Length: 374
Ligand SMILES: [Zn+2]
Image (cartoon, rainbow, N blue to C red):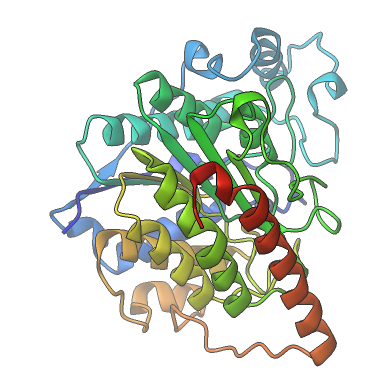
């Protein structure tokens, strides 16, 4: 069995961004509870690891001193800082809430511990479901994200001499991570997402391929609304797998957001638990040390099911489809995997196929040569 770490502490799910905010940290507790009901934390190869808060020095691997100070001050509500200058607003995507500095440094610290465990070889895979906050920028909050833990963890790993491939399967473009490494050919960033034509943050188009010496090291695969499992898997298999294999990373950092899910309230893709599980299996199948992070996901019980499926695959256990009684009764939920069949009309199927084909062909033509892939 692979040596695997799961980063968790109940404190990670206790903060509330606002009463109406779609990002509900309770989904983390549901995921932990569901996995616990299956008894996975009793497996000898699984380590349940408590996170720590990231330090200011660690945050400054990616973020500006001004921004870090502003978040800390706003968090204590003792600020003279203007909130909008740093991406915060009342009732918007990034509300200011008491204790947000501690909450954000804890989820970031969890990603850093995961990165340390991978870097030292203590584990083969580490999963921080509280991480994956890929929209945060150097000097401002964005898209529910305060500190960009994937970018901070990647910077830590490259400082240790590692070559890193970042694979982002969240429904939204991984813009903050892309930006942090856009001119760095020691980091490959790949984002497969619903097109920015339809969805926040409005970036992640095929022609964003990196610059300076890193042209070809930023890969974007925008997809159409309604994209289903089959097209999603084909896009990953044809465009992502050959590039990751040719890049030969020492470590893969994967953002496993599950807002691609068919019932997710914020997005328009049609991915089921089967489609999600297949992509996770591909990522594990690279057989490279893996730092796995959470990310988006706003149908909270679907998040718990899909991240549990992902962790089952990481430890190499096929979790029984029947959810254990203790969790099933509390949440009125019986099966781990979807039974839904998603049918598309001919017009929509054509749109979905054509968009994916265009994205795949662009990468084959413009980025495969960087890796000498035929
Ligand atoms: Zn997202």
